[in-house]
Every structure is written in C-alpha cells, then in structure tokens.
Amino acid sequence: MIEFKKQCPKCGKDQIYKSNGKLLRAIRENSNCRECRYKCCKHSKETRDKIGQYNKDLVRQSKIIQLLQPKAFWRYNSTTKTLTNVIGKGVK
Image (cartoon, rainbow, N blue to C red; front, top):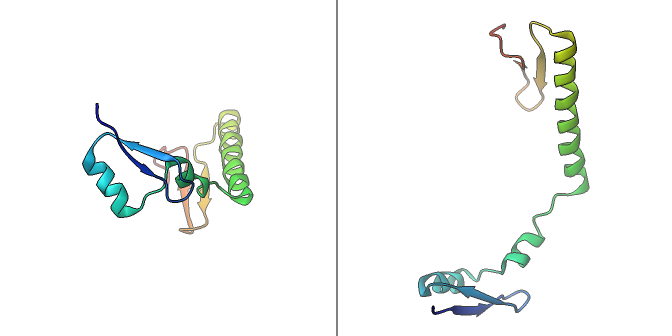
C-alpha cells in the first residue's frame, strides 16, 4: 500500500495519508497533525465548572422528582427566558 506523507507545519511530525487526493487537500489547507489540532480545544476551568454544575443539577432534579413525584416540575432557561416542564405530562 502506498503512503503519502507530509510534515505538520506546527510541530514537524510526519502525517500519513492513504490517498494522493487527501494529501493534496491537506497541503492546500495547510492542516496540522491531530495532536496540534486538538491542543487548543480544551475547555477553560470556568466552562468545566459550569458543565459539572449543570450535571449535578440534573441529578439533584431527578432525585427531587423521584422523591416528591410532582405533577409538574418547571425549569427556567435563562437564555430563552422560558419555563419548560421537565416531567412532560402535558401540563402547561
């Protein structure tokens, strides 16, 4: 099998492609290797904390629903400024 190679413009590692078309596209777009491409895509600490808090809220909310078994449980969406029924029994 023929391998087509080019070097990453950022770190200099070899990138291997299976077809000549993919290699030409990578050269044209000056694409980085996978490691360099995903180095910049990490979430900040504030974003990770928000994601963690949202997941904790969902767990807490499901425990409240199981314990109290309400007919409706409303959650406020601050971006759209609307209330949504989490239980979904058609109560509006």
